Length: 273
Image (cartoon, rainbow, N blue to C red; front, top):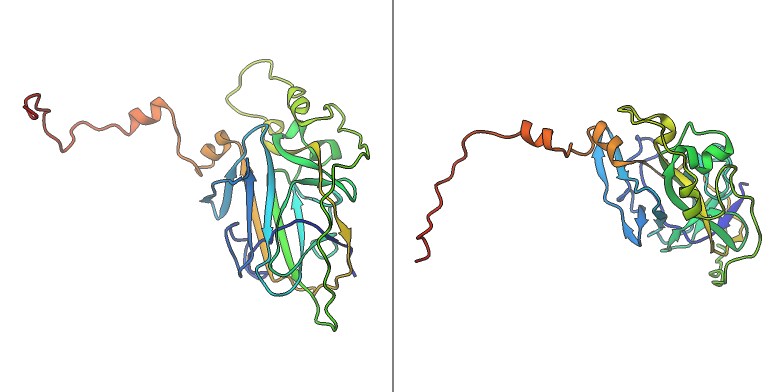
């Protein structure tokens, strides 16, 4: 039996047999990335769904389970489990358990039973993945959903009470400060401009300020076959433009689209007299 956490989370979607679908809906599960409490716009391209990473902005991941039964979801950010920051298969991952009809916003990396540290967009060089020593999966958010094996009786759990932020301390990543704002200030600047951005400047997720997010461990035996899967990619705007996901927006590009004649007439200064 895999370890499970009951926490505020919302469900992702995509057929287990099909390639990952976008974050809107799939098999009635849904997921979105929230920035300033609002779902980030999603852009379809290159067979994936992208969102724009806004450097320095905190975000949360909203998951929902519209079904009348409990589900468990393995959630990874930058290839790391949002619960324990480990890299495993989705089946072996520590999972979040959502009650029937539950919708919850996951604010960050869970560092204790009472506290999480917020997700925020940053450069790879200042990311949590960089501190953990593996940046091979940065720019990704993925969730895999599992139904519960049928058993009687079905155990119903009450919501964990909301409490203040915990006091447990966690060492900040090497080379960064303790808070999100200070972490952003610690990012090194390039000595000279370059047309090609290095990999350390691409978008990734940082580990930011503490926030209260109480959880509890529960028993849950999952059906080993996932019922839904979804993957999101996030990048800064320059990379989304380079990938062709967003259109180029500069004066030269506008000039290149310009034409000579348009189907119009000369303005009449006496028209309203």
